[in-house]
Image 1 (cartoon, each protein chain N blue to C red):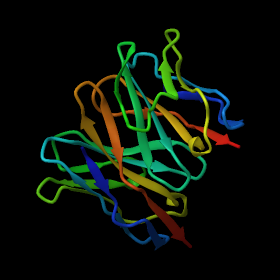
Image 2 (cartoon, rainbow over the protein chains, first blue to last red):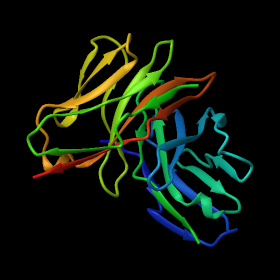
Image 3 (cartoon, one colour):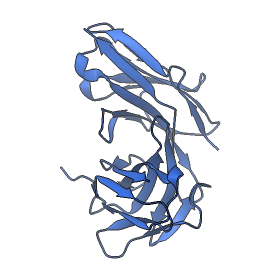
Image 4 (cartoon, chains in turn cyan, orange):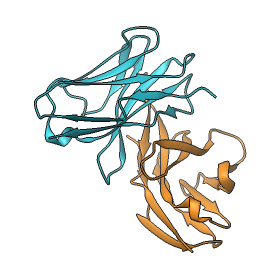
Length: 112
Length: 115
């Protein structure tokens, strides 16, 4: 069964460093998303991506964040200069249309 | 903007007892509704979804949910829980934006099944 994969599973970084979180969505899907979950809190939408551009982003997704689909398979989230409050679990998801979104296992980002 | 309220942050329940997790959403238009489960240290797994049709939706692992438009609710139920159902459960609504279709999640309900 096809699934969304994410790497790494855990990333530890120093405050101010850049991180890139990687995702491989399901191959025939057209819509891609990033969500995050700060420890003990709800899952929050960050950004959606369709047709090689951002279709919607939340107020959390400021200038420090960017997304890219560098090739036909990967979908990345970059945080330019990490802050302590960026520590969270980051989930990638994909869907083929409006409806069910399939989630990856997540990347736990720890900013020290 | 959509909002989703899960009224219970924690629900302790004994094994083989029934459980109901409450979810209310705010919307005046057609919605898609979902329940996801998150087992400890894992990602989100879809339990069930309501897109249209019958208001009683059956999902995996014996779970079901009922869509009630007049009460804007989508409560999740299981008649007899197992220890393995210990997890966090998230209700979510699909928000049809201009171009995106983001999910808005509730705060989650942590279910602890006791022997």
